[in-house]
Length: 323
Image (cartoon, rainbow, N blue to C red; front, side, top):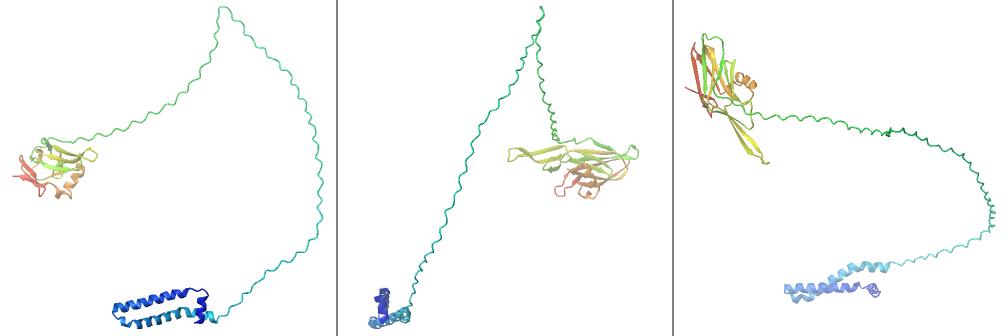
């Protein structure tokens, strides 16, 4: 403990911190005993606190005490700075001989050369015009004005192509559609077809090629335009009137095939918005099952076969024949 006291006497104040730690440790032990209701065991608690404090003090301070006790101080060698040796005096050098200044050359006087005298030029005498004769006045000639350059002619702009006018909706009356099959009237008859209608077809835009076509024996055809058109318009987001739908009507259609040879004949009727050149091959070809009507008519010599239709059935979309 003598080494420890020497350290304290030398000014190390850490021992006071350890005393505070001892006080806190004893206060904690007494507080725990008081809370547990065992105040009678306070002496044992104080002894236990002292033992714990001594163990902590030895663990923390014993290595430093041992090192300070058994370690010899090493002498610090103080190095003396070497004194600089006095330098030998250098041999005196003879003074350098400065070159004598060269005499500056004297400027030579400039002699001006006399300028050559130009010979006097003769002064031209103006020629006087002859005096005008009495009674005749001579007008001085006026200079012609310089021609003004004409700007190049601008090519006329090509006229803008005229916008094609919208095609009007084509319609036709219901009656008066007749076709003569043969020139001879011997052994022939007439097939008369009436469609009361109305038959309707609707499109979102105008279709100028809308038509009803009647084909006899896949050879003879009658093309009938709509009898009435109804166009519906609505206002778009720009406030413009645009077409929303167009409905085509065929009402009170009357068509006939004259001078038809007696015997059975096939009759096909269909409505389309396509052009007739595209529609006809479909009617007589692979698309014949989609026609509005496919049937036969038995014609006698000199007889008339009357075929009357109402409207298309809304379920089968086929023309129903009126009996």
